[in-house]
Image (cartoon, rainbow, N blue to C red; front, side):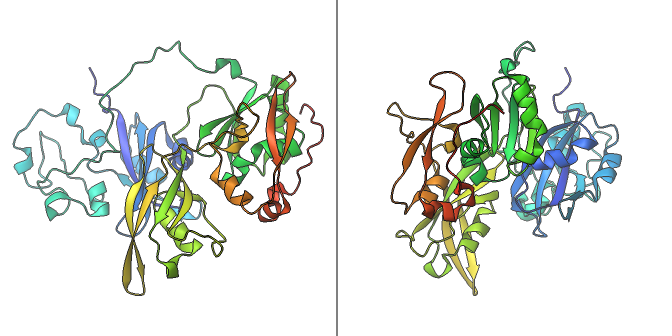
Length: 402
């Protein structure tokens, strides 16, 4: 049986723009072939650039692929691309006979009749300087495997006949909001625009599944980019396509010295782990200055628990970065308790905006055609409206089907 990785070519991609996600990297390069996976590292390479890996299926000429991609601009950054030197996908190990003496050979010497050492390419260990034994790249040492980069050893064969949410084909759209505030307030934006939907479901990261009552309403909304353009960076019909894993991670930054307790510092720390979606802005009135929360967009499921060193004025300060254990969901889903109040899983973004307001007035906004189809919204005080322009209008009035 053919090895599952034998038809995969993995490329090392450097000079990624700040805050780049695996999804964005995939979208940038998907025109060059079929992509089986993307990964963006949390670390930087020796040149201080963000980097990642892209795996392509059924590549006929890897050199030609590298040549075509090199120089492609992602935002303002020109990408630097090479074949990932020590990736299992590129090593051709499935075609090589077992050779117990291969680690005693000099670097660059052929193994099993094929050259193992490739020129002008870098491995993950070359980039971050973590080769075992300190002898430079490979040099007869076994390279330490990366836990989050290894292919899974367990597989489940899913029958081709299966496919979830088929009933939503034609009546649902998948959207990726431009920012976290838009995601949290999406139900209010629909209310202000007098657009009725059947359901809003969270997909992770900045993405949501929007279901309409009929196909005509879904198509009309999709065609009205003048309406949804400021809300979404991407909006597509749902037809069974797959999406990369994205999630919003809320990080607790513990131990930032008082003289460095600045939003700019918090953003810089957050950018080490992903694209910063939210950071404190007005902290002078905070009562607890020992910890702060930052929201970042990440492309993997591994929980974040790390230590970061702040270098300032020739001094180093160690701080701790710990991900919140509570699973976060945006308030736009309209999840309510049995008494009509919001469920305990409330959005930290909304709570931060609401702090300081004198009271909240509940209002029932109809978003469906049948009885009981409603979401509970809040009319916030001017304090919140001033801090977030999206909340300036709260009188939704009567809705109509879009």
